[in-house]
Length: 293
Image (cartoon, rainbow, N blue to C red):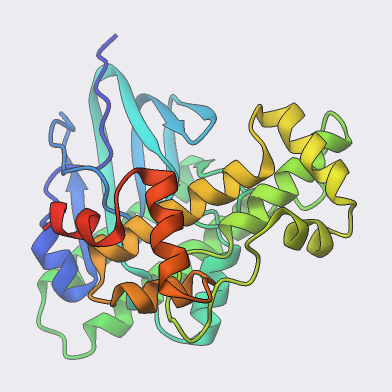
């Protein structure tokens, strides 16, 4: 077995992605290039053929043939190759690149963001040929000089997502082992769908265990007991860790002021945010930002 944890794919030009919000490339057969970890400002999706194990959040996904894959930047992930070769195509894009209300909505409901959806979708031969063609089209368009190529690339992304939803619809009626597992999955999905934060004008709505209990129409004691039983961690810890992760991302990848970030994350005063961030991470927001420059 060839063990190679990685968070990205080969030939990613980070500056190009940051400038244009989009990048598409052919996956190298060796998959031997790693980009510095911590990036969370872009999504990834692609079609790949290989013998690979993917660790995605708390899931272990085995890939033995051709699949369509989706990666949310806020979910920890790594890849272990079990053979020498892997081939395919991948594209990376920021949420800002997908403009418009309808596209944002389809993104939120896609395997990229839907906690209940599988990030890996097996493809039959016909589907694999079609998806590969779309990625090849994006690669051709991206390298060309068509005046409206950004819009064409967005259309291709949207088509891939729609096809993924058609091939494997969301499992809204998923069966769970028990009520605790069900409510935990609902909580995790509700927590994740609040991110990423796009504007300080639309601050975080659900910040406490009580907020989530009310939104899920369950008693807070039942919510806390269920989540602790299933995950081993209290509800408040999940919320604190996720808010801290988003705070780090905003400090590292935006030029927002600390005050704006505090308001966006639902803190009434920047001082409250400073104290919260230091308690959770051990550093002040300002010192964290400086250390990442």
